[in-house]
Length: 239
Image (cartoon, rainbow, N blue to C red; front, top):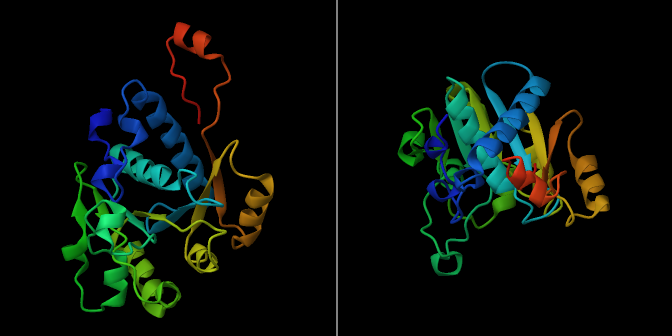
């Protein structure tokens, strides 16, 4: 699979490039993401209508990058319709965020008359669609806990084979538990060397029973020293 066909984070809803696009990292990273989604889907079971959440204990642990690349790898490898979306609603302050705010999930849930097809963004992969987070509503907690949000998730199950949802960090708000309950499985992204073990334990305890299907260790160090890794032709990245 040509790594250039994988969608970048820039093509979805942040201003950062996907790790899979970095020269010299693509093949190794793609295989790591394959292993991650394969293990997660095996835990969930079923072949369609799957909703996979990706979260972390705290912000800035790499969950958005993991969610984006998992969705890209799924769409690249499997003949399935994949949706990537996020609950990280934008404040609407484009100057502060440095990017154009596009309507998305929040607008779809908040406005029953909105047509989903008008909000979906196509990617270079024909079977991967992106639904931006959208503009943050006045009361995001009410929106996340609404019947309309549950109906939206149900609709995604019916339309897409696999939906990947970039969730809020588990320890950031109680709303994260509400959204976690709507998922079939959750991958927890942990920043090694940064995330206190107590925070990881709390995040796991907050998840609904049976939802945790994998842990992605981000910013891990390679087993081999860098000089030896380069000598044998590998990269210095480790999952």
